[in-house]
Amino acid sequence: MGALGIIRLSGPDTFRIVNDIFYGADLVKADSHTIHLGELRNEEGQVLDEALTFLFKGPKSYTGEDVIEISCHGSSYILQEVLDLCLRKGARPADPGEFTLRAFLHGRMDLTQAESVADLIASDNASSHAVAMQQMRGGISSEIKKLRQELIDFAALIELELDFSEEDVEFANRDALRKLILKIQKLIAALLESFRLGNAIKQGVNTVIAGRPNAGKSTLLNALLQEERAIVSEVPGTTRDTIEEVLHIKGIAFRLIDTAGIREAEDQVEAIGVQKTMTKIAESSILVYVFDVTDLRPEAVTADMARLHRPGLRILAVANKMDRYPYAEPSSYASEYLPAEDIIAVSAKNQMNLAYLKDRLYEAVVHEDLLLENPIVTNIRHVHALQKASESLDAVLAGLDQGITHDFIAMDIRQSLHHLGEITGEISTDDLLDSIFSRFCIGK
Image (cartoon, rainbow, N blue to C red; front, side):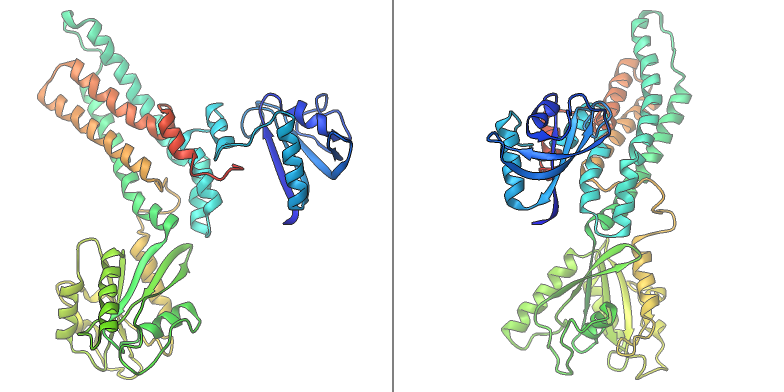
């Protein structure tokens, strides 16, 4: 229930159906992009609601077809009655994502733009919104289409060579082809690298806060969130289970996970908590390792780092309780797995240096060479297509080096064009479209 509710229809019979139930203007004769006030009545002439109709005649509409949006009062009863009335007049319920699917099929947007509609609806912070808007405006597809067209031009020349194979002529300059492929490979590599940031923006970054008991992990969590989310106690092992909260830093969502202290457990419940801590670390992208400078020696920190380190895990160490021991040298805790620049002196209790810690967390995700203004991949489908396109282009380069015949080179180029076309939807299958649009909401 709400103040307003909207029923949207799209298709060739849209104006006829709505005109049969709307009294206030002849919608069939009305101009496109106009709004009309009137009454909605059922077959018995009973007034269901006073409503506005918004008219969009194809192809200048979201779907490229005739579209009408009926703006009613937001009573669930009214909306259901109007919806049932439209169905009785010949309409049918939309499939998930069908409005956007029709927009794609009518050429109103390409497939990456269509997918970005779902991302825009799901965006919950400034960065995810900015990336979705960039995609809707053709951020990735414009780059891919431009390079794909250049590759098509070369492919056409090589295909022409096949028609003159007996005369041994070359229409496609092999050096120029090599330069183009290296150029496309560079763009693909940049797009693949951007997925790490894109996925972080879209899904959030799993960030585990871990360390030994009484290191101040829960105090740090509370300080970062600016609320008393976790219980703080001097008793070791207070945190038995994980506590998860979201912290937004400059538009990036960090899914902070406070965990049980890492030590030899004294009972079965604590043992389960420690095991869960290790599992969460294994699943995380960033580990914030907290240690107490008044209690832990460098050798112990080094031992913990050797145990917790794994390829791909970004570790930031927080030297906590500096207010109690201001003469501590954080750099003395550096080791093979922990560079001195990744050790941050903090007093979680006094909220000392937390702004710098947040900056370092943000920098761990967003590098200077991977800025939000550049095209960013957020979709795993695009990643797979880019990887396959890159493999096909590698085969083209290998063929050029080995001097293989043009028919094999042409085949590899066609394969790379196929995979690049899958991204923008220039090449698509019903199964692919079903998979993409089935995840949309009904009304979009």
